[in-house]
Length: 110
Length: 118
Image 1 (tube, each protein chain N blue to C red):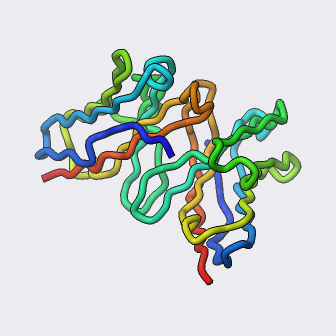
Image 2 (image 1 turned 60 degrees about the vertical axis):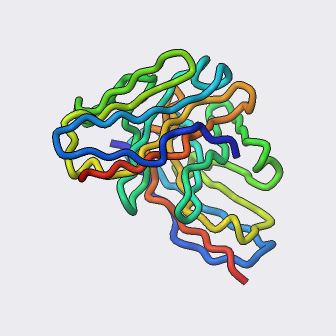
């Protein structure tokens, strides 16, 4: 299973900004759009960001995504306790002819 | 609002097969593409394959080719994932999701725990 590197953990105090990186290659992030998923403890994943930087209806604007070259980032501003979750990036990989996920980042609110 | 409801937990023996269902409500079934993702205990997400019912096309990563079959039944508004030759390491929660035009997995089922145990 091919996985995109992400920092395993990130943390911040309430109100701070946390940024999560996701690195890839020209066959995945470099050539395709990136999506981000939030998985709260014990629940199914939820789409958080699609097409690099777009938020589905209902997702707070505290969450923002960006992409540059073969890397992508998710920023959570105004961190809240309810943001404690695992976050995964994902993209289509042309070489694998399939979707690849990041290894996941656990966000902790201190 | 589209909702995906999956079948209940399963306990299977090594070498057997399992078929997980995913019933869709709140939308036009034929408009959706479906994908399946699994998550082993304490691990991350793994894509298992997908299907576009309108075109009758499915695709799978090499790891699951020949062992996983994804199908749909429009009359039942249901998608299915069948895995054969189960191994202990197939113990995981299996999720179905709808796939949007941008490749995002938009709506998710609640997950189905499949335990492989002798």
